[in-house]
Amino acid sequence: MIIKEGTHLTYCTNIHPGESWQETFDNLKKYIPNIKEELASSQSFGIGLRLSNEASLVLQKPGELKTFKAWLEENNCYVFTMNGFPYGGFHGQVVKDDVHTPDWTTRERRDYTIRLFEILAELLPEKMEGGISTSPLSYRFWFNNQQELDRAITKSTTHLAQVVAKLIEIKQKTGKVLHLDIEPEPDGILENTAEMLAYFKDWLIPMGTRDLMDTLAMSREDAESAIKEHIRLCYDVCHFALVYEKPEDVFNAMKAAGIKIGKIQISAALKLAIPESIEEKAAIRNTLLPFAESTYLHQVIGKDQNDKLESFRDLDQALEALDQTDQNEWRIHFHVPVFLSDYGKVSSTQSDILEVLNFLKKEKIADHLEVETYTWDVLPEGMNIDIQSSIIRELSWVADNLK
Image 1 (cartoon, one colour):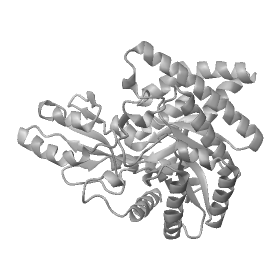
Image 2 (cartoon, rainbow, N blue to C red; image 1 turned 45 degrees about the vertical axis):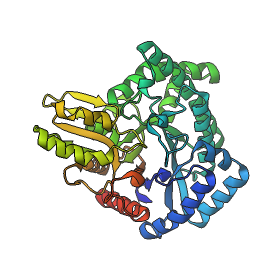
Image 3 (cartoon, rainbow, N blue to C red; image 1 turned 120 degrees about the horizontal axis):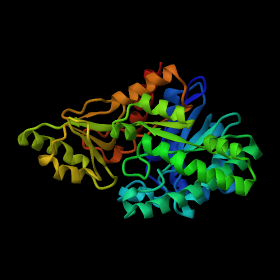
Image 4 (cartoon, rainbow, N blue to C red; image 1 turned 30 degrees about the vertical axis):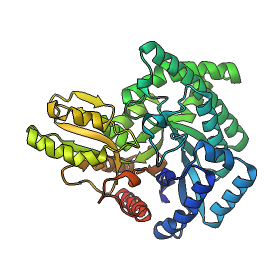
């Protein structure tokens, strides 16, 4: 739905299980008309589309695209953003670090992303920008040393430059501006502001510029401008809250570096104070155990009284260290409903979302807003409510707080 002055708000359809295009389309037909009727009956409704690799191979066929475009028109809907992070299965199976597979070192990731952009270019309305969020290059613990990590970054950057070349071609043919939005997250190669800035400065701009100058005979200035036009930041509120970064600081740093924000993913992490006594820690452990589920990674980042951060790759590892820790706060990568701030013994980083929304009232830093609470089917009992009602409640809460 359009909030104001071309700002588009939607939810990410990765909330719905299903990897095939038929399953994806069935979910859209089941949920979107009802959600639209409740929230935006008199206006067009924007969709944040998630396509697996399998689904993208089917939807790219002209007949399937024609059918989908007709359904969008019939239901007064449009697609303006896509989630290109999860390539394969995302529900009902162990995902964990495989959410990064295949990573940006591979042709598979490059080709999948280009295919998504070709689909988006067909679906995107005229005079509207379109974006696709993607992984933070790879999972850092797959690499044993700095040399291996550097090789991975080099390969990834080469593939990103090839995507930029494709987006330049699409813009020349259609006039549509499309951008790839890199989504930093804990334990990705890129996980915070400093690493994102360093990647642009030390890798993407120098390498990408050189590649575009060689392949497209562009000037250095035009090549750098194209990179900054077509590669942007996906600001996932949960992920940046996990690393204890304040939204305004991130936005100002990106602006100073000339890095655009392509999409803001509105999501909340778990947050809790760590007590000192063993008895109270035992109670906290019992509260957190239901969140230590086996589908997704739930990284934990703790902070002590000196603001020193310590990370755990998953919640079960953090719980093993709970009795010995001297940290006084934990933040846990578990996307919880954005409209709640308190869950009894634990709370959420909802305040970071409110800071982002308040900032957006002052300065329009991104056109695309996407609620991304994908964990409804693994939430502990008592937190899991009807998906359609949840989506409506989340979008309504965001819209109300943007007024």
